[in-house]
Length: 356
Image (cartoon, rainbow, N blue to C red; front, side, top):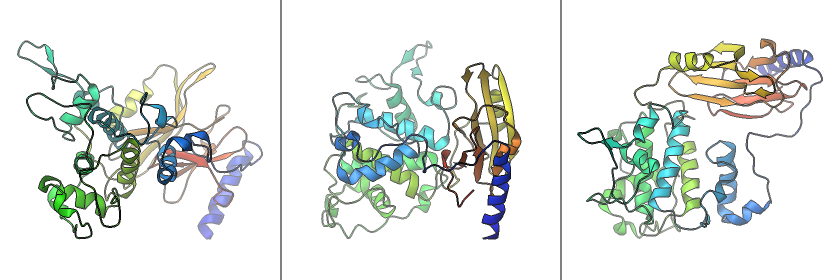
């Protein structure tokens, strides 16, 4: 109660500098409208989790329209899974895909003459290159990737397991093989998939097709892919939300900060350092083109940003306040509205009156 009272007093003081204190209903970044037409494009069981995936930035709000001619309950193919997994890894690491270090995983190989050659004969895709060189997917052999083939549920478990190993500081030998006795079809699970299936089930990333059947040979759909990536992000023992990721070579926090500050017309109006973050408010501001954001540079690697609506004029450090744990940043905009930034998740929502 003391902590809450102190925080309320501090934020109230800050907002007096910006005008009247206002607390509309809660909101967060991209948001899906409950009961809207998009819900008809996915299965009822997936609605709540896909809403959460959009709010966390794991999917864009038009995710259900990204693959022309394909519905959410269609079987996802191997190339589209590669597209989903590279976006997921980039979100976990808080790194863009285009410049190094992640762009190096998307590039083609070079032959002895320095000419680019593709990894596979039947697909020419940066996403497939990324997923393959990151060790998440494999080819069929003889230079074949089979991009249009569907994915079985046991294959999906292996790909999700490989995804986790790609970004988590979690040695594989420390992950025990778990019990599959609950599934009557456990003997149908291929030996090469048992470790992955048992782990994904134990972490509630994947569930059975029923209480007693996993369905290893059944196909994996788009909406199952989107939901299982959310669960991996949320439930796995290590990852961005848990404060532990394995960064690729080439990441440097000081260089990332210098790059940000070196942009044309860059201005900076707030700066703080904590054990886990460098936090600042700034960016490029060129007349009516304003690209200022809250930037978060993580001590364990990566950089994220969130936008605060209507935070433009007479911005001073007093408009910002870190909570006592220094994991939440409160920002007051030009109308006195208080926004709450979750620094680890890199999400923003309107603060509740009790918090402010």
